[in-house]
Image 1: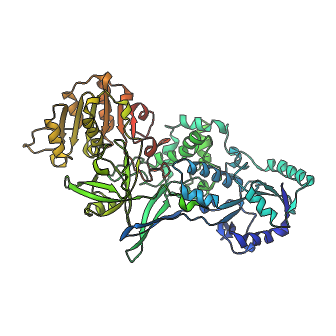
Image 2 (image 1 turned 90 degrees about the horizontal axis):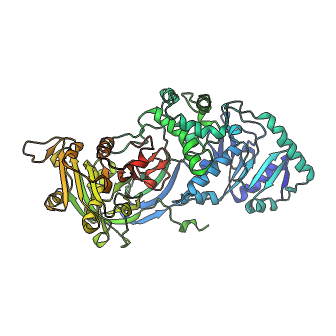
Length: 341
Length: 278
């Protein structure tokens, strides 16, 4: 059963969510948008373009405590799995698709228990994109990731003065059943939804010339292309693309010790395959020495290796890596280059 | 939600160091026992992640054979970084954390009845000693055992007492070479590939196991192919930066595969298809 909610009731809805969940929402900050834990409905910016960091960071934080221990007694070692009940609200389809990819990658045995616990404790409310976040440097439409077919409990589509709410899961149903401002959607609402979705098609355009289904094959043929050396020369190996990517999950493990030198904890911290030392071993050998190899690895990991393993591209086309690259390296340009070979 | 009871794959088991033996000026051999008393089964060339609480984790290959006495296993560790430096400073009865064993390990089922040719350079002897001792423990199940061992200097050679015993063992054909040596050194001098001229093999009935510094592999493989060995019978122990052991953290990835899951042992037939492998 789908429902609708009037725009003016959304603040009340957010307020009601706040009474039982941590609410993570898009928030305007210094002219940009981020996902943050909010305290009041007034902080929410439902009309936002791509956030700096993706919402998946609330499921897979950059610094996650795995273990607590006392240096004097290792029997005190205690695993930490933090999973607050939280709602991630107004999530764009590209980011939902990224979460779907993370779900598959991290549930593969041996599974990532910490991620899965957070994931199970999270409700996801999607928010339909009726126009692209920006003109170029995004690939969501090319990849079909501007639409999400699963991975959310509720999904909001703006119909003008009201939202159409697609109720998908029991958790989503429980939420809408709890509040009387959700009204059962009728035939009119549904027709309107179809119209809005039909109109949406005009707004999106492709960024890459060529058949995206062929991209993975074309890249494999381009392993020794000159593009990697060219982009590698530009790359400063800062790892910004890794940090902002909604499907980058590589990590490092490190311990922290309190100043009392007794209590300590072990943390999983995001690492990046673009950083110089990522593949360096203790004896000094570096198995991916050049920036060219590292740039190629990032592109191949998303488009070739993840695709082979899970049957879908690991790049959702959000464009964050392009926007945040200080060397102006663009996967759109790389894809267009290899497709044009 | 019950997740608290589900243990993370990243949580170590408590273990105790029950023995320490100085091997060279850089390497020590640690004997470790899990506190749960169960021990574990492993294959040669698998590795564990050791935890020194307050510092972190590091991957170390298991040097002891699959069947251990008293539920202990051995780790040959070079002091080279923070964590390995700390474990070198620890003493018997000190407690550490252990995760694993991880990796595919050596495919023992493929080598039964075959001649075994082992090429070990430097610290590579640490993981492959597990296989050597396994073959010696089950001597009747294998054919010839040929060992080519290389090191930088005579004083860097690991497991010297055992090598002396293997020298006496007529069921082993062994050649040892060092890169640099004083005139008193009675054995070979030169890179490990120089030892191939002293051996003859039956290429159809031989399995080769190669482990050593990364630079060694392509030269050794070339020698083995020159001896007409089949690519699928050459096994390479590809050590990388194993960080998580559960195929997630990305550090050991070469092209599409995680070596902590599908490695570290790859046949040359598999490895040569991976551009980043050799």
